[in-house]
Length: 290
Image 1 (cartoon, rainbow, N blue to C red):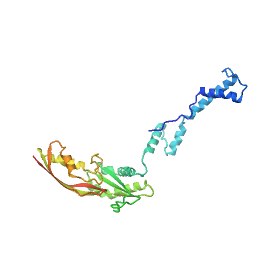
Image 2 (cartoon, rainbow, N blue to C red; image 1 turned 45 degrees about the vertical axis):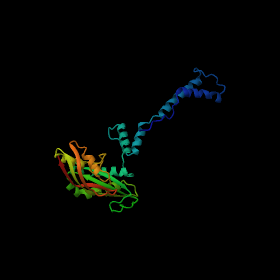
Image 3 (cartoon, helix red, strand yellow; image 1 turned 45 degrees about the horizontal axis):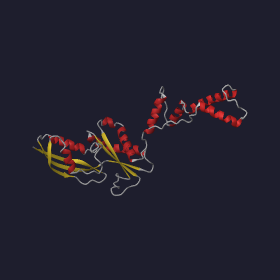
Image 4 (tube, rainbow, N blue to C red; image 1 turned 180 degrees about the vertical axis):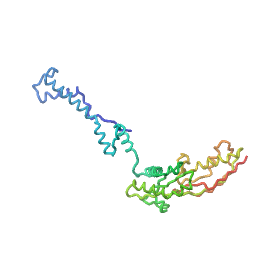
């Protein structure tokens, strides 16, 4: 929401004339003719008219002032560009995040760095990613599992693509690029660490009652989508960090699928997660009985 423009002075011509006439007895008591025909009153009205024009100009910002303001922001108008276009660019620049201060800043800038890395989209056109920032954590050197490391910031980089094998070869370079990008924009006293996610494997064996045995593929797809670290979870923003998977989650997911009668049995092997860990589906066996 923009700030409302204030009137620096809203006094009118009539008010100026009235105020000037009220001061005449104070300074010139012998001046008693205040009719419009009096030459003195004519001069009062003339000066009031000039003063009203000056007041109007006070509230106007000339174009050269806008140009000076844009220059302060480092914005130069291109040849033939209108002033309004330059102002829009200036406002947009002010609203952009260019420095990492909060956790949200680190996450947004890390994501931007990844997507702006040279050749990343050419080599992996279907790339998707999620960034998670942990304050006062040194996940790179495994020092923050039990105690906080003040001044350290760890960014977990979760990247996915169909060509995962080639992406793994680029993982180190990607992390170094993102780390350098953040280091140039961080608070001076912070130390930045960019790390891979710490996955914990889970195994699921499931027995489901349904008429159509082909529903096994649908069940697999629903479960994989729900626990996806990038697009899973309740809000479709990625499975929450440190959030355990429970049998009740699986019952809730599967029994909502059209065509499923009920879930007969679930065996779930899932370790208790630490606050910085994520789950990864290692094995999923689904048996459908009529």
